[in-house]
Image 1 (cartoon, rainbow, N blue to C red):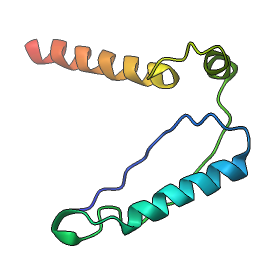
Image 2: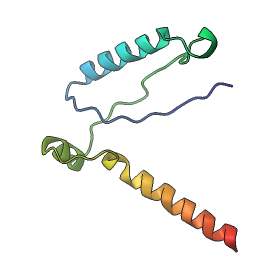
Image 3: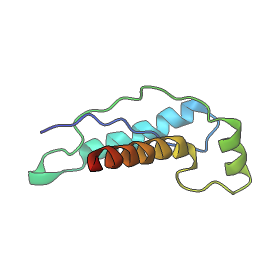
Amino acid sequence: MAHVVTLKLVIDEGDEDRIYDGLAAIMDKALEEPGDDDGRWIVDWKIDEVAPANDTINDSIANDTYAEGDAFADQVRDKAQLLAEFNKSAKQ
């Protein structure tokens, strides 16, 4: 069964053309890699959006204080909160 995956990355590069070119090179290489039973693991790909990071993320990268997950901390909290609410309602 196939899945469509949405992936978010934080890339420390100011030139969007280099971002597109670098990601295209990585994904084209991934298309060549065999997966299970010698089939391709990644069948197709595209870049939907490239958007500048906010000032907080840029500053933390520049100051070498960025920690894994900082750019997505709101999403992590939202998922944790949803899980807590789900668990609470399941107990009732």
